[in-house]
Image (cartoon, rainbow, N blue to C red):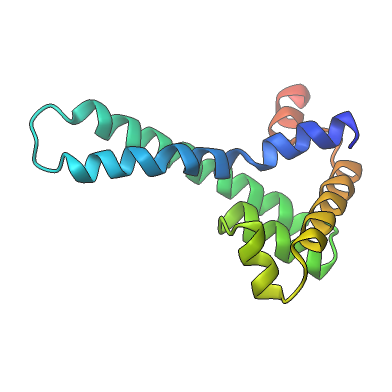
Length: 127
């Protein structure tokens, strides 16, 4: 994977990474419902939800404008926006898990050719 593709892959995975951080925080909030002093956890949950929403919106915008094959787009959408596991994607699309991962890597490479840097970094360098 090229350096640009690796950087882009990290950027694309932001929403998923934030979601994975958010799950235990939401479980803690649920466990502490009605308990005094849980405002710190509530603030963290709200911050993570906001960050996740922004990351999802930016990724959705990128994927909407990208030139990907229908299969590449579907796999990227299922994994990074709907948080499907690779096994679940393979089952849903009736393909091998290994093939889903290959298509994913091809999509990342293709996106890296279309975008010199993650869109957030492009906006910073333009202004």
